[in-house]
Image (tube, rainbow, N blue to C red):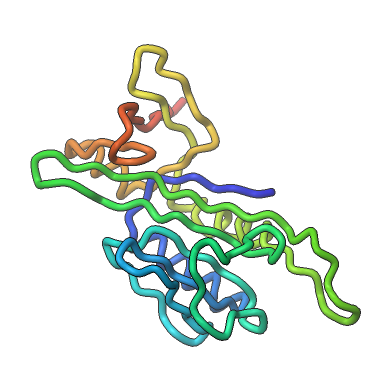
Length: 187
């Protein structure tokens, strides 16, 4: 299993996902809060961010479903799909929150048919981490009495700038605990 948690702007995430899709010939399923069925996005179609988008699945284009699916029909792990829960910038101008983006994948455990290559989506997550590394920093701390540090949660420079402008970082806008960047001091 591979996972990647990051505070970033939606346009940063979608730029990385588009690069990944082009490099690996990946299709996508997009789920919104307003539709019961997914939107099927072929590898040659662009992803589009919308405020009600809450989950994306990426898969090899030759294994793209032929029709939209309901969320309960998706079998991410057995099918070997990558899942991305994009964070959003939510709230009004005086109380804004940047939600955490979570990307995860686990290599398919079902044996493929003879002559069919196994799907290894964990490599896609590692690819995204390498892509984000030049513009992201690892390490956030909880904004609570314990102030626990999380070295496996990343943030981009643009997310840090939003934080410094008063935007709160949370895993989800409805949660109580917030996060802040850990600023490393130059030696």
